[in-house]
Image (cartoon, rainbow, N blue to C red):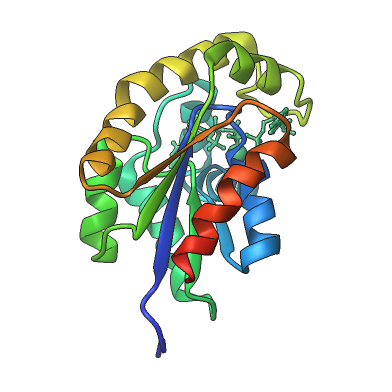
Length: 190
Ligand code: UP5
Ligand code: MG
């Protein structure tokens, strides 16, 4: 059984805002487990699971995979970990995701990190990534940006009203951005 309740930070921001890059730095500095919802879904596709084809189609369209699938993948990772500090990157993407998480996991996040980035900068970063992601093309990026504004910003608004959001300016080098992130995490552990 677990000795400590989970301490959960949701890491949000548009496509290419630097969530994954900053999570790697937080892991190095503060000893968290990094759970990227997108990476968990891409692993499902690669493992030929029963939902793989549907998940692939959804990601190609920049749409949101049904909450039950994503929450179960996250839950499995939390329950099988010895650590208790988690960064959940790129989730929840809509109010329905958020409500499903809070019901199934039975808790709200302790806090939320929001990487605020202009759209032109996000497009530039995603297009120059070159890792062969099926959604890193201009058509899908435009769809991802629309879904982000319409469905993810309301989640950020919800948690802002609860006083849980730490907003970070995502422009600048990865190291410069991390110098805004570091004091936030230092504060959590003081
Ligand atoms: N880079 C990073 N920081 C930089 C900086 N400060 N200056 C210059 N360059 C910087 O960074 C993107 C690129 O920019 C990289 O090349 C990096 O080196 C460079 P990254 O850290 O990867 O940004 P990130 O915000 O993680 O971008 P990502 O593309 O992963 O964000 P998305 O939110 O679009 O992708 P995700 O993998 O979370 O989701 C993909 C799809 O999966 C979704 O569109 C959706 O279809 C599906 N999905 C769900 O359905 N449900 C979920 O819960 C999660 C995903
Ligand atoms: Mg990412």
